Image 1 (tube, helix red, strand yellow):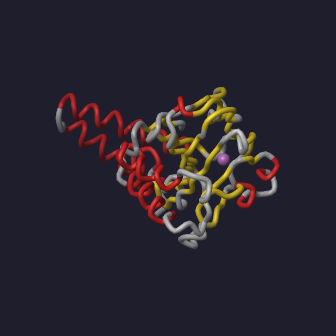
Image 2: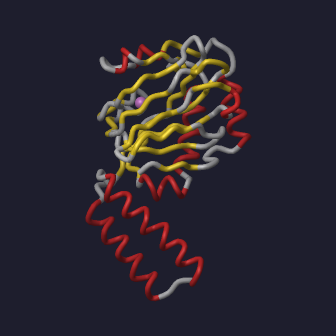
Length: 228
Ligand code: NI
């Protein structure tokens, strides 16, 4: 599943987060947190882990994700990896093709998180930088994404992906991973499709014997497939 989520953050949230991320002092070379394969292709910057405002920014992003009904339906989250923030500029321009690690350790929560879904939350408008597309190599072809500030994109962590070189301007984003209660992307997609169609049926016809029965099927499938 590859899902664009419009306006996960509102403009006030974006302004307050960007206010902290302006300037150079909070940024460190992203290579410090790269694994052995990623270190060869990672050329960006990340917010210093000891930055005094980092926890507040992380909580803001988490709160927005955990209360977004589309995120809850699509991801069926079990655990969120603590959100991180990155910056791409012509001096630190790109992150070449790579695959995200399967098991990640959060130094904030001390949890181990399996990366079922990767998420990028855009904090810059597309016209603030040149290049910097998130390119996801799916089994059905290549997707090139440049979201508006506040938009997020969710995609299976099993896909190779990259950020193309930023040749002008600054691209700010938050990124993190989600461990889902439903590990299989295929099963998660079925549940999401069922849930979205039930929503539309209810809007069109109200609650009926059929929507009650289909809701039962949704929950019975979830009961079979979910690990809590
Ligand atoms: Ni990645």
